Image (cartoon, rainbow, N blue to C red; front, side, top):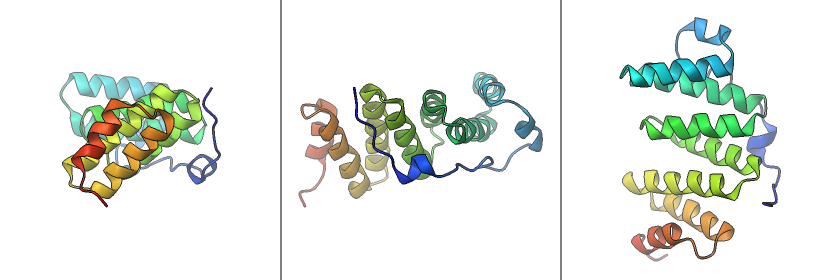
Length: 150
């Protein structure tokens, strides 16, 4: 199994309201928030989906429900509205699940996001962490090959 190292992310309390939104969302359970976000996605209401997913993810994370938090952050990234802090939180939650495949997925998506924003430092950091988990990871090798040599 993947050895989980305690980090500053896992020890700090996540904000319960990372994004502005309807105050009524705070009265829903995190699972209800996730279901509502999915309904918003189906209705094409991405702004509301993003806000609701962010709230659900932060709530799951604050309660140390790592798998649910990682999934909520994954959905947030999938609809294209994740910020740098969301990618960092996703990777941390994925690490805490102890599942290398979740960690690799979060780092891969983060590296691609960094590449799209011409953030070679962030892309390199994510790809190098992927290599630490899986030294033969083709995605990480491909990302590193795209970056300028240091």
